[in-house]
Image (cartoon, rainbow, N blue to C red; front, side, top):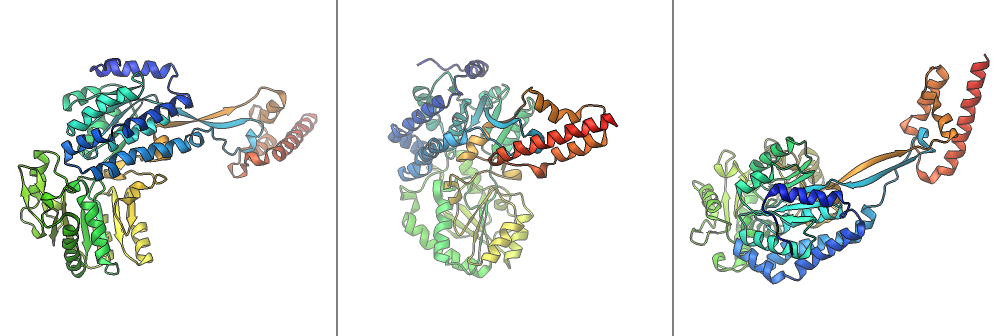
Amino acid sequence: MPSVSKNPQEIVTQLRNTFNSGKTKPLGYRIKQLKAFKCMIEENLEEIAKCLYADLHKSKFEAIIMETDFLINEIKYCLTHIHEWTRTEKPDKIMANLLDSVYILHDPYGVVLVMGAWNYPLQLTLLPVIGAIAAGNCVVIKPSEISSATSKFIADYVPKYLDPEAFSVYEGGIPETTELLKQRFDYIFYTGCAGVGKIVQSAASKHLTPHTLELGGKSPVFIDSSVDIETAARRVMWGKCANAGQTCVAPDYVLCTRDTADRFVSAANKVIKEFFGEDPKRSEDFGRIVNDRHFARIAALMKGCDIAVGGQTDSTERYIAPTIIVDAKPTDPIMQEEIFGPLLPIVYVESAYDAISFINHREKPLAMYIFSNDSKLVNTFLTSTSAGGVTVNDVVMHLTVPSLPFGGVGQSGMGSYHGKASYDTFTHRKSVLHKDLFILGEKLGAARYPPSSNGKLKYLQFMLNPNLSLSFRYLSHIIVFALGAGLAYWLNCLKERSE
């Protein structure tokens, strides 16, 4: 296995030479790399689970469901549909192009950079890479240094399974990342916080590099009094407690009436015990905060809050109990930033319309969750608010649908991926108009040439009318019509000349 250069400029140069050689473009090559990618995950499940436990105390169950299986299923979906996705598109034509070839090719961007996040360090780093490979790109993979064990796994194993001439892993912290971002990439995909997202966007702007930013935000939950509160509590608390709340689409806060809140707190308290026992600290299914800095930040958010459930902490283990806070105020520190931990504040509202107003007076969230049996009310939320994605009567699960693009809006991000959206993200749709030089085609297009006349103007307005576009299914009929139109135009020209 060739050694991986630590110089980002050398890495990018090597990958650009590979891309320019055309090596990554054949469909067979892409499929071979995707299958090798799948083998990398399947053959090293135990090692991956150990790394995720070391970084986040992540249970084997969560490691499989939310990390490795997520990747395997994405690759399977991609392999099933890649022939369809990569097929040349043949759009409808307008009358002026009836004898021309009109099509759209799918071009890879070139050398792309994928920057992963620490909270799901395997999935969030490698899932975009699947789309980049499927599209035919070369990739620089930058794992998060915060999840150091998983970062090392990616650095050690990617070169063993994927083509090292086309795919390189670059590890490091802030200084190394700063140097990496000085390089010219053809596309940048970043997952993480908004602060670093702005740095990435600034670096991309220097070269006008297109980019996707998968960020986060405070994802709200509205709970209507009409729902089964036990089911709602079970689903919300699962989404909040998974990965100890360190999930970009975790329920960040709840909006409901005081009466609904009382019922929810009672049900959620029972659910926490059902999930993790009397002491969640002893449960193998409950994770830990990734490092001391994040632990201190999250613990500080509880100060001065009205804690109804939980609140226990242990700095030696970076443990924070599943915690529910009631009567949170919009001005409280816990409502000023994304929590990214197992704290769930409840904000009292008088009605669903107050909840909509509350959401709309804040930055657009990455996800929004609506619990209601009233279809009209659900539709009001969907049409009156903006969010990256929405799940109704559950949380987080919209991520598991491969046909649904996942991404943010506004401060929660830009661009999307998952399934075909991943392939589309790393693909440039190149429009092609191919005209022949034979005499009939020239006669049909001659009306654009000087000298002008009213006859030419009317003819061109008709031929260029986009509302008269027709598909390839009617090509034979169109050709006959075009020949007739061309003959009529030619005869009209003869008449104008004779007069």
